[in-house]
Length: 362
View (cartoon, rainbow, N blue to C red):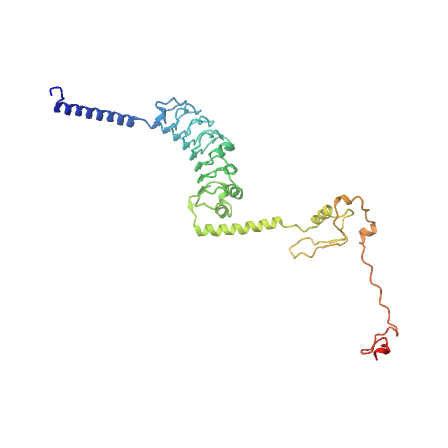
């Protein structure tokens, strides 16, 4: 009985275990709290990105308002989701190969000339690359491979003040929802509408400050061609007006297509028709009677029936028509004149046969 532990000893050991467990939990909680998720390196006059400490825990990195000229030492930030590099002197987009979790990239107010090297950013949702090369006359360029790669994830794009003259580069961005392209050099709103009409997810467009904004029917054309658009130049679009403009645009485009495909009935077109499909010989000027189109109603166009269709293989074997045939095409002979009726050929009187009936019928 003396070897058995006492009840008081058991209680003491239990209390010690509880204290140790609480101490371990507090240490773990403190470690979690102390893990840095935000890296603040902005406004420190940095000329080079330093190697970060505890890079695996960083989710937000702020390198804006520095003197950085190159993007480097970011391969260890493999868990980062937000990267701020605006207001620097960066000239080339690079160093993003290891940032597979990056969702938002801010590169405004730098000296970048080409948007490239985005093939590793499979989850990129926002790209802000406004005000590039402000002091240079060249417009910002876009690498087609990068646009195709981020086209499945990019939702928000800001390309303001980049001297852009067209929007053809935006066609692969099929998931794009918000496009901000203020203060560029966009003149032709018809071409811009053709480039953006395939982006079925686009709901917000901003072209304030472009020359095309001051042109007639700019808003009507953009609204009619972009079917899912809800906001244009910070102004909401009413559903009734959008439906009307879309139906009106369809009618106009069908009419233009019909006029474009209509065969032009002119003397030049007729000559080309004869050269391609008719027998050889001089131009059939006498076989055509074509009225040059004016404001009046066009006259009837007549083609000579003496010209027949024939394959090109038989053109050499057929002799060329003579001059008289070319000037006056052959016609059918006139009918013979009517001869005066003789007494014997007089018409029989009604009711009396011309020949007497045989006797056997009487």
